Length: 105
Image 1 (tube, rainbow, N blue to C red):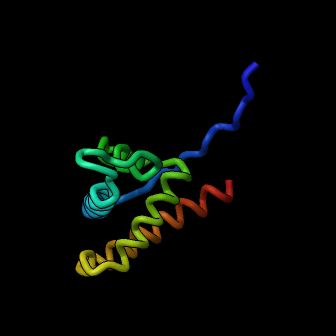
Image 2 (cartoon, helix red, strand yellow):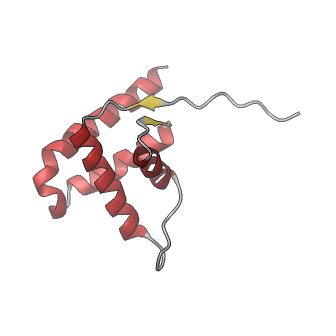
């Protein structure tokens, strides 16, 4: 008999259109820069989060939220995202709240 695992919690991110677009752009840029070869895109929670967002989904598992948080934190400290820094800070705050809510359940 297969081992039963508890269901993975899923948290919803409430994002404005502009925030969703910024998050999409940040994740896409990250995936392009971390590709391992020509045309190869990395797999894992960042890719999965990007695909969910690209499909219009705003619901993420904790692993996705943690990956999003790491990518946003890196982007926040790069010059390329300087103009959008306030939006990145707002996104980081929303993701942190979603992760805090997940740990309280």
